[in-house]
Image 1 (tube, helix red, strand yellow):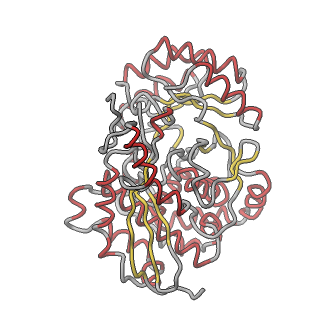
Image 2 (spheres, one colour):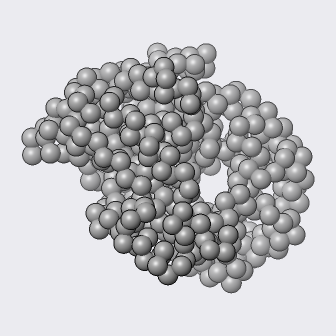
Image 3 (cartoon, helix red, strand yellow):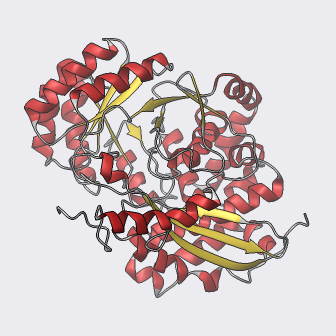
Length: 451
């Protein structure tokens, strides 16, 4: 296969899965999500494809797809060497389009679309290099890696020279950590046992099965009813025992004082963290919650919906998070995620990526391997999220062994969806969706009949 020189076409698909039928992914804020992904395919003149995606909960996915489609003029026809030799400048170009930027800037729909396109570019680059993305990032010279990043608005916290120095400092021992990852993998926690819509019996069954598979880290959704959360916490602790790690996630539903009071009531069950306790944009609110809960041994985790590197900078400056939860698609793709990982390393805050969804586990595993091997050098209080649905639909599903992600070896970012699955679940005319409409389980606008 010849090495491609330029991008010749870009295709955008709206792929959705009816996960709301079984309450998979349900939480206090999102009670019936249909896990979905705007899906990008980049064609090249060398017959090599770049695949990228972002993530939504169903409705609105078509808006992100439209936004991604409007970016074609800055992608199609571009020479790959021009992009990859100065990727930081290219990323700045596509995020600072003077008109497109207005409906962001660097946040929301435009940034979700940016992530899908940028992730596809990195997938293409890694395939060209014949390496999985994590390995390409681990092997890249510090100066070349830093040249891929945009330090706009964050140089008061992290400069390019500092980033290069940080990478060089860890490089002397990175081979040892890489060998460790290849042997034992990266620790993960499971959310699949603790969705808010699950019955007590299902929670018990799933948590028991997870322990038999080697999991020792768990997360439970909270936030609808305090007494119900206390009851479910007691069930969880009884099943997993007193020593395994247990976290909780409120998905933004509380005010600041509500979060403090609620988590004080749950403190006897020893949660490691409370995730997204309030509005994801309220940096000072998170700081106040952290100040109140840290003496109880409860940290604050957030970042799943943190809009950009600038907000992460402020969260870190304000001591508003103890666990940095980067998302592979909420930020503007690989370039921006790496800047946040480097900032977190400087502040000595563990990176614990958010995952689940469609392809998010497949994406974030690369960041965890990179973070440990190249940046942090520590596994203390570090773990990455895992949810066990929507993996068989992937061309290269994550490999899990004894509660750890094992490093993938195939070239690329590895977020491709099986072609037959793409065809069946492309919204709204895929065969799976037509069948659901015919059965009356969904309306054409993908609302349930009983909503």
